Length: 470
Ligand code: HEM
Image 1 (cartoon, helix red, strand yellow):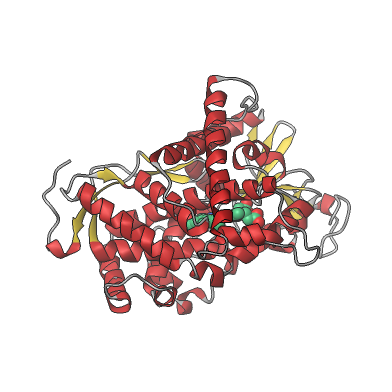
Image 2: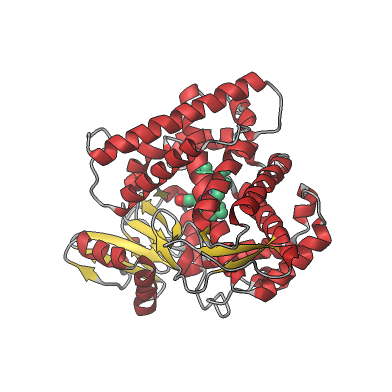
């Protein structure tokens, strides 16, 4: 690890490197005010105004924003030991538990050794039949509830679907009731409040909001404990990933997870695996809703490969264009729109000095639109993920799932789920996005559509959109 006076790879002393250009603020609040007013617009402005490595000076503090693939690689892969999530997420632990997402160092390595094997592609492929079943039930419900052609908000529907997928395909549990959905929604809303507000009272302070959050968290914990009990009672039945977690042993030490560690992992997986996927699915259907040509191509692929039956993992693997639609949606609307890290020691990024204990933020939203690496970056063009068009692109110009050792453990689960959901939805329905409803990205904990996305469904074989009401 480099110290401030130590030479970098080219032999230059880090202290002799300049700080990157960037704006000055009297206090950190000046910067936060700009960011809160329009985070995505502001990050875009910083990049246009100052370049791909920007240093925000806030009184005595410095904070970096970097937008080059090689800098992303350096922070997340090459020199990852010099960067931690630090206390940036400390308050999130109160909600999401001390699981894989927010732990550091040896505690994180141990947890990753427990959790990662359960999410290997071969294991995830084993739960595709359950995913198909969950989706089939969801389509049946939509047919009953929205057959009249009334418009509805897609986002809560996708949140409900993604939560059902986590509970049933990941944890092998029953479909959760409406009260559990409400509790999880409250948990997510509370997380958004924590991330959005600089100074929040610790959870033990009995404010009205904290008391409500504590009640929601206690309810979520109780339901998750029940899921573990049922998994124990099932003993060997079913292909759920929870059993793999319960039986996980560290290959080197033979250590197993304690009950508390298991619950923390499950809360983390629930939070990390549900909200992100729901947002990806919502944005993907929104984008397709405006691109009849891509929708027709996706359908023709689905009709050829899947026919009428429930999809198998092998068939899903042949839905190449559908997967490219998922990837392109993750490019334009990455649910994790910013990845912050904190340097431990001083470092060099893009020829500039990064002081020790300095925040470095990388934004997939910005890098995924970098004109040097993406042709017509604002255009929805799933074919840009064809091998012949991707081979010359730097690998870290695209990082919706992060990169390096701390990249998303659920990537295969998420891609398989999204491919299945898009394929089965568009096989059954025409999805019309209501044009008069303004859709805007709202970057909070994840990139949510502000005011939702209103759509109408019509059974595909009806040959026309159902009568428009709502
Ligand atoms: C489209 C869906 C998803 C997206 C865009 C996404 C994105 C990400 C990103 C960007 C990270 C890295 C965060 C960082 O480096 O700071 C991450 C980590 C993580 N994700 Fe996902 N994720 C998705 C779905 C899932 C699913 C389905 C699961 C559940 C299995 C999951 C579980 C996790 C966990 C546990 C981590 C922490 C990994 C670690 O630190 O070792 N994610 N995800």
